[in-house]
Image (cartoon, rainbow, N blue to C red):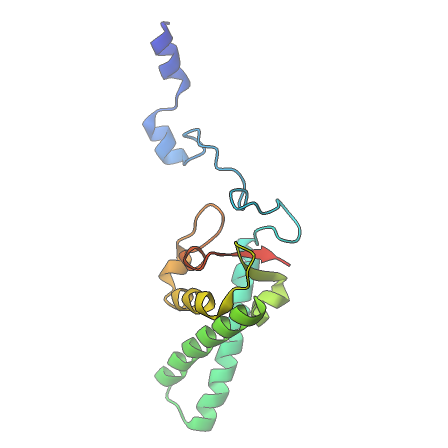
Length: 161
């Protein structure tokens, strides 16, 4: 084999890289949070998907309970109750994240939201994050550091406590 043929044989075919993902293409992606300077494990490490989803479900369930209580007291219809569940979820996410860096669900799951520059999340970044989270789709688009568009826009990451 000539030098060019050996080099060609060492590289994966384009179908292998497409079907196998970035690692098959030889890209070294590193571990989640490495690019951000976060530790590999323990306190301050990027929180897992499981903890985040459980926290989300807890926060949503609590918002549903509050909205259901208000719905029975204020005689809301089902669509009104659904809308208010979303509003309550967004407001509690905004206010709790902005002030203490964690929601009730996140606290129960042992995770919190931190700004990457070390400052408190604050009301403006907390609002931007909550708004994008309520829109759902931005929160579903993640990068290799497990940060959704809502985290990237607010310069935050969800980490272990």
